[in-house]
Length: 195
Image (cartoon, rainbow, N blue to C red):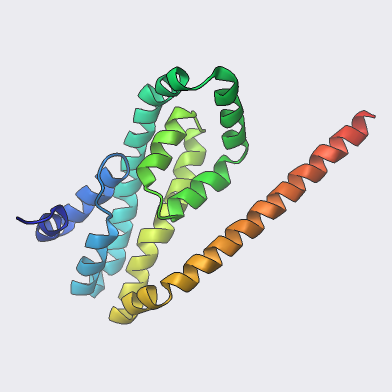
């Protein structure tokens, strides 16, 4: 019996669009599993494949956002006390830009990001801009690298995956610490001004 990935690969470009769209709100199939073989098979179309996967993923993210908007918050209200939900909402909204961008780049399934953004009613414009940047960095970058470097790009991904993960975690930690220090100093300045 064929796996879902094999079936989608047989569909080619429409399979890539379907995987990128549905992965944003329901599907467990990562579009990269289709994008990379398609781009390697047709390197002169690799950038178009990456761009198409980015657009389809962001459009699917809008469906996930709508799902979160409709059922996410009511479900969260049933499971969580209002004071905690309010605190989580405030924290996420203050850091929405960074949270959505990092999650869109990370291996966290994007469907969780899109549904959570809708459930917490994150500003739609921010969600779209950051999703385009994050998903573009993921899919479009793969297409561009395969277009220019072909199979060596895939080898580069696999050889340096652990190094890139460590570097990404260090950068995320640095950004988090700097953000915390800046917010802390602004809060202290506000307290001093009130005195």
